[in-house]
Image 1 (cartoon, rainbow, N blue to C red):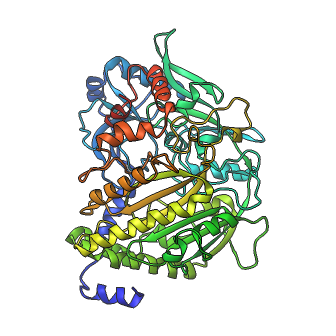
Image 2 (tube, rainbow, N blue to C red):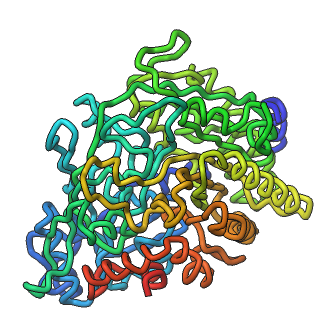
Image 3 (spheres, rainbow, N blue to C red):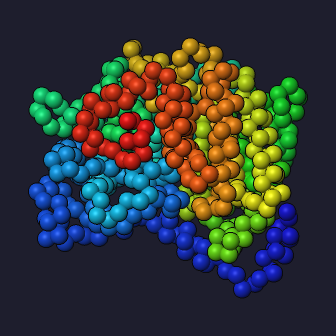
Length: 573
């Protein structure tokens, strides 16, 4: 689909405006509204609440707007000690506590979709005050869990420090990122040795110690306790899914690097995702040479937006220097053509326009890379690693990690994309268009505790990147996400087919599928996080004995289930 054909399509109805759709997008991007609480009402509904912690009424909205609630009680403790007071109040009065950062997630780990205003659920906002940042040593940083990734990486950059990879959104709070083993995309390039203080796994693998609010048997109350990475209990808290509340962490970090990121849209999907054994420009060939890749394959298109990062101490001649993050303004702000199409699909139910939208997104990316001189950029790592703002298009995303050997990455990518393409084509032939976003593919290493440099360190128990028992040859994870607009008909059924393919194909024989905690999974034909077999059997089994051990630790550290939700209750029965 060319720019001209997209324009011709839109000109068929010149009265259509993107304003309605953009108003909805702006609402999703807005900070939750906080309403000062009437003291009399607060005293009646939350009697004896700690006087030095202000209460407010608030709305909750997750990333894609599929989980919303209004009129909930919320507070923003000014220090970890106030968090403890709030948790003990909740325990004594039969309430649950749900930590809230930026709400940049999909799964109902914070609150379930049907949460009512009168629910005895208290949101504890970490971002206003739990934001301390300080260097503990030349290779460690102490950070409050409310600090954003952008603030953390900016602080590190100022001291010549950084991380190998990070999630693309800079608005994520550190606590939220660690709770769901957030990751970027990186494995060692050919000949590359891991720099000290870095990891190719998740951010959780950088934690040296953490402080959490846990039950203290001696005092008969909840209290702050610091855990070090070599303690048995710590492994359950490194990726706790919201089943605990961590207030502060100490991270191991290393020297910052300058990264070059080259984007291209000239490699056909058939070549990039080809079956292994060929000599073409394959996904695995770039992974081998550079180690840091991402494919964004818009629905019903043939040429993915393919990014390749490489370590480059000096600026290459053809690269444009970037001095701040978010180098792709054409994707950070919903372009007119994309907004018009998406708005029409949502408001008029014209879901058959998915191929037009997919091609429009590719056209925008291809033209935008040229217009903004962003196809070849270079700078400190933060400035190429962070590239998603809250103003981007809000879509639903499923998510899985396939753990395998690095020599099997092309096989996994080829098998998955072939199945995806076949099923999407079959659905379209029946007049069903379940996907109007993109497939996103990233690759990381696993969580090797040796990366911390701490003797006796253990891997995060519930991280999707935890090494698999009895399979040391599986050293790589292929992350697979499929994005579509919320409410797209037949999406859940389509996602269920993809999920069954992954669970059945990579069942632990030559590779293993684990879910991506923050995304969609556990699909029935009608909804995510609803399949009893996935929640009760497949997910726990994918972690082996670590699942039961972590569940017991989390239960012991919170025996009164103050930190609980419906989904967590189903996972940790």
